[in-house]
Amino acid sequence: MLLSALLFAGVGALVKAASAELPSEVVVFFRNAVAMAFLLPWLMLRERGLSLRTSCLHLHLLRSAAGLGAMYCFFWTLKTMRLADATLLCYTQPIFIPLIERLWLREPVPRPTVAAVLLGFGGIAFVLKPGSGLFQPAGLVGLAGGALVALAMVGIRRMTETEPVPRVVFYFTTFSTLVSAVPLAWAWETPGGTALAALAGIGGLAIIAQMCLTRGYSLAPAGQVGPFNYANVLFAALLGWVFWGERLDLLTAVGAAITCAAGVIALRRR
Image (cartoon, rainbow, N blue to C red; front, side, top):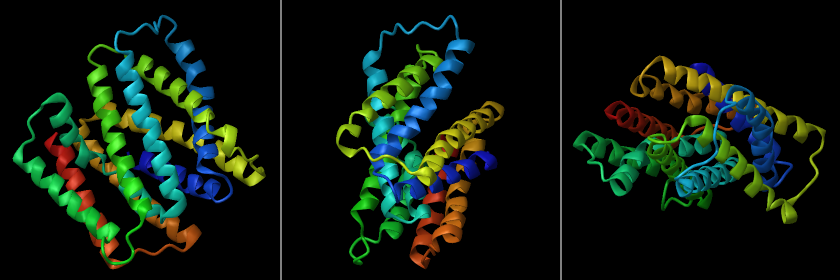
């Protein structure tokens, strides 16, 4: 799990580096296209009997739209905020998941989980600093990305009652690649050598990190291994400091600690 956290932090750093030269729309497309180039042949070879017929296409579209929207939010936030801040906002999904499950699946939210959600939003307030002149619209976009990730995860949980995981992966990868190709009509810029290497690294590292993450969840319950994902924020802070000289102020550090603690509580309660 620590390896997957390090790799995901590396993905964020490469996204930030590529976004300095290219529009976010181009970076998002390459992220999805590289994943599609690797994953679809792998699925076809491993899951030869996989049927693409589904009775819940609307759920596939909702999950895919939420996942792609989260990607756009995260990549744009990485371009405009410090690496650690953007990563933290993306990893707020454990705080949003109980709320979405309550509204969508009508599941009750235990009081300790409610306390964790409130604690998490308190930590986010320290990071975004509303009213201090440092409040950035990018922070709200990053927070929206965290909520969209939560929506996608609840959608996956809802679908996997009847849908096999490879089918979910296929629809998401295909949908994301095709839809993210549309903005290229007005946002395309040809990447240079450095940006192209970063784009290739984004796709490759993301696939390896996802495999490590999946392996971790297969070895232990989510409540035990999920909290290790927050090491991503620490690694992102380190990479931001090394490559961009980004330093965290005291309020941000306190807010990050509170938000991570709230996420850990919410994961363990689930």
